[in-house]
Length: 113
Image (cartoon, rainbow, N blue to C red; front, side, top):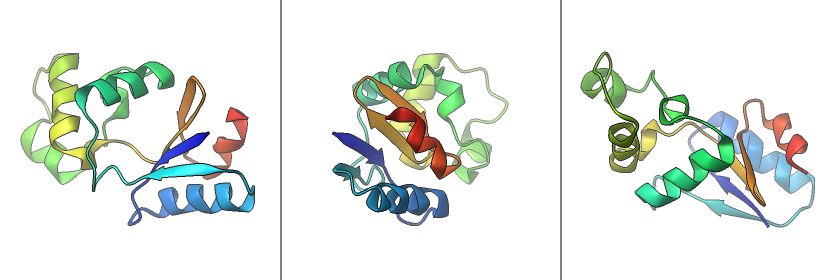
């Protein structure tokens, strides 16, 4: 099963959902702003993405700029920031089996399967 971590207000995220719909494949949508990810879920995504925590952060978000930019932070602190402020998480994230990617551009989804 394919899972897409989706923000309906994000154009790139909507493009990812549209691509999955066009492929007529079964997938699950997780609206992670409505149901924030736990610290463990974020860690699991990082492992599947092969990312460090800072690589998953949307550094242009106001929350990041106002609260975290320029601060020395451990990986654990960055993960906690994403758990507390899910808007900081890059999107869309698509997961298939033990792999994941940030689908920017959306057509990158096709490389997962």
